[in-house]
Length: 260
Length: 248
Image 1 (cartoon, rainbow over the protein chains, first blue to last red):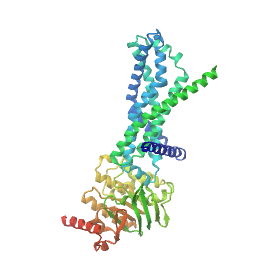
Image 2: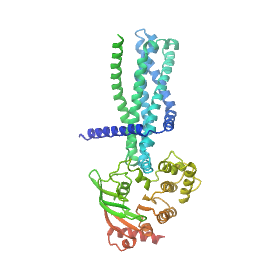
Image 3: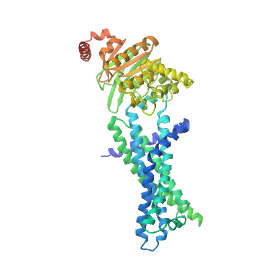
């Protein structure tokens, strides 16, 4: 009955040890800048169109939802500010991170899992190289940087999506839409959104590289690794979203308290 | 000289190697025969530290490699080349880069010209040419296995470990690889450990044969000794070898 709990603790411990290895390798024998750039390029190019498209629709959805709510209060002029604030601070990073977990996370996990079960990782070790340095670290850093870039690109597109739907659905022209953005979206909102992006990218990179690297048992094992990557990144993103929201709120309180 | 002294390896409750003890003198070819799942590949992987034995000693030139860390294993891996059961070529690299990979890591002082010449030489050893710019997925499985062998011999290891090197290959390539094992051993005094199911090939080129069953050595000796063995598993293997010979 307690086996799933023990398995989870075991997995968590394994993941922490793996991350320890990754960080120690990054300090002692980092990979080359070119290797990281290659991974950033691969991941970004692979996911940019879908991320931008989903970012656009996230903004559009938020505008539609806010229009329905604030029309009753006669505050349609604040639509752009409210919609953009909610997208940047919460919904944008969350939805785009979900998208990336399905695309980048599953791809990386499957790629590393296949390398593991076809003995490519053992071959790297036998040929005198450290697989964490050669294979994991460039992908790990590449995923973090490119997820961050993709999330930022998605957020920018969400503002355009919101603006377009503001015009088409709510009858708010773009000038009116952006007028209140600086009033509601402050530096803190942007910092909070970026902080979430970074945390989600870290969660995604850690889970998919760990699950892929530790895959065992042929094609079935790779399948299991991909499924658990998808599930764990979703759960990890939601849990860290809650934690980062609490941290952001506490930081805001301190910031506002300090301002007063 | 490689010595196994009472080596045991367990995965959880399951003991895969049950006190293995044997020696391989330098320059000899040792065949490890056995049915699937008897721990042959596990035994091979413990030599290069891909798996750690639960207990026992693995001595290479008198040094116990079992307790060594990943970093300490580097010179041991420089000395031992391993050919895996699967080709294990790196999909994202070309054939040239695959063969050059070990040289770049183990022999960082080699110039690009020397690396290129060595890659060509190693590929011709396994009867391959003009495939340097191809990716592994663009060549056949048999060719991938031969590239894998070229990659391993490129750094001139003193010890060669073969994990079923001829499985899934056509008879011509199988013969070529068996001849290559023999050639490397005789010309360069390379010590070879070959995990295989192929008794016919073992009888032809091995200096010494070990038969593993359920994690234990059930028979060992020279090919001539094994031909006289009454051990049931060895008798079965010999029958298979005779049948294969008769069918040719």
